[in-house]
Amino acid sequence: MELNLKGRVALITGSGSGIGRDTAFKLAEEGCMVVVSDINADTAHQTAEDLRSAGHSAMAVVCDVTKEEEVAHLVSRAQQYGGIDILVNNAGIVKDGYLTKMTEQAWDSVVDIILKGAFLCSRAVLPQMMEKRWGRVINISSRSLFGNPGQTNYSAGKAGLVGFTRALAQEQGRYGITVNAVAPGFIMTPGMRNLPHFSKLQEAATAKVPVGFLGEPRDISNAVAFLASDVARYISGTTVFVTGGRYSG
Ligand SMILES: NC(=O)c1ccc[n+]([C@@H]2O[C@H](COP(=O)([O-])OP(=O)(O)OC[C@H]3O[C@@H](n4cnc5c(N)ncnc54)[C@H](O)[C@@H]3O)[C@@H](O)[C@H]2O)c1
Image (cartoon, rainbow, N blue to C red; front, side, top):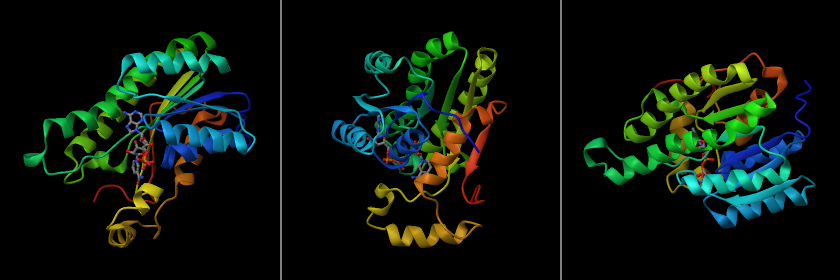
């Protein structure tokens, strides 16, 4: 299937590592010019450098997605490539704990990065997409939207992101812009592999996945690339679950 993404400009937040980094590579391999963005300067620059070494067009811009002025700077830097066609709202963190012990900071930081980040980045890039009458916003949600114990903040944020996706899809359809979400299940990112209890976690999670194995970042970036393409032009406001068949529980 020809995705026809050649020459498109893609901005991926939180693309210094994990799923975001692989999405940057996947979209670059499909011909996109990539704006790598992360709060972590070292990983953002490293990813962009690795992309350029592989022969792709990439720039790095350090940005905290919860800061309006940093998001404005990010979008203005992307003008160098002619403005953003594809926005992947990928930045996200976890700060797990049961609600009765959760600090206000743990609540605010998790929900802000997920929701305020998607709001600020989408608001900043949409005027350019509306002018071009073409655009893609892809929000990285999570299977946790169904509710995971110890993750009330994260589950609320990821479920909220699906509501955000549906509402924005209805606002933007008339401009040739689609808005969708991808909800990953357990994906074996380097961050996950480095967890001290990874092997226990892996065993427990694998047992719950109907297809019998855990996902890789490429499983997510393939879904993102599909949604970003013209092949998916009639898909908007939906959430694609990339979970190996596991939903709640
Ligand atoms: N890995 C999984 O199993 C899994 C499952 C479901 C959903 N997700 C979601 O996928 C996305 C990527 O997760 P990952 O596993 O690759 O995590 P990761 O920690 O490897 O990558 C997240 C990136 O976001 C960056 N970031 C954090 N705060 C930021 C901020 N304020 N502004 C900009 N960047 C910021 C981090 O520096 C990091 O590079 C997240 O939204 C996560 O919730 C991951």
